[in-house]
Image (cartoon, rainbow, N blue to C red):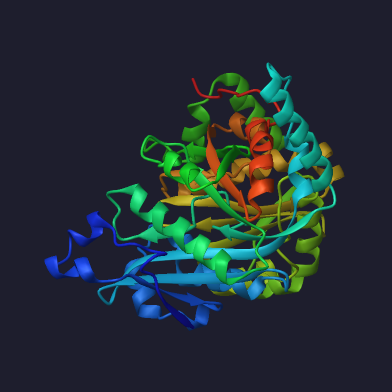
Length: 414
């Protein structure tokens, strides 16, 4: 553990200090950096982060750490003020292949001389990036599409937490010279989100695919209620998916079964993740076993069999308010003939309704087919700042011109 006085890195926050005693104006916030989840003061951490932020609590992060491959490192930071924990921030360190983002980027036609110069720099940057690997400090979790970088006690002002996150990240970068850039990921575009504050700190924003959320209506007491809310076209589509996959059986796996089937599960997972252009990290061969061990019944893994062969799996994480559709995998040929991916999506909806949760987070892939089950896109910003100031300026037009693959939004409900 390292304890650092942060008079410059983390200046006192007026809104937070006003909630304490008048004498706290002179209190200098300090933050404690940890490389292992087991080193974090458990009580301070868990008392600070509420259960409504499950991806910043012990069981989930312990599972991620236990499953991580050697190239993934972790930094956990607790910020104290007046001997009281006020902020927790979570970072991952990994070597990122910059070329993985190039499929998204395009350089638009220049409208003037200055824009032409910017585009020339952008094209040069793209060429250089093709073989570029960079050590990135990532605020948040590369295995999630949900907000999960930090929690601050001052929940009334989103700027307070963002400011702390930026300043902690910049201080970590100073102390670890190998870091070539900072990536702050997954912030919903809301009126309260302080995007200007992040931009002023030198970060460039860009959009990956949106997160697809399905809000579960209170009147949906069963899967049949959900189907009844659909137009006949999409209701028939759902029934057709089940009919075409009727030869496939599914069941929830126990802890022992997950351990036994881990190699096959990982193989199916790899078949799917290869198609994800913006996947920045591999979960690793022991990911599902270790996460199941850490989360227990909160993590559900279902196996899909055709006769005696495992042909697909899905995993979901149940939280207090929502169901997180986590990683899945399937045999590509089997998907074409048996509509297994559609079946999995409908099975996830069934789980969410049965658990009487508020919404389902489906993640940011296969957007059109997820909209067919009723999920709605919610844009999320990602922010990048390169350590080299020249390359950071050159990266700006690339970030501005990132374009997602086009897709058609479907509207399945009446």
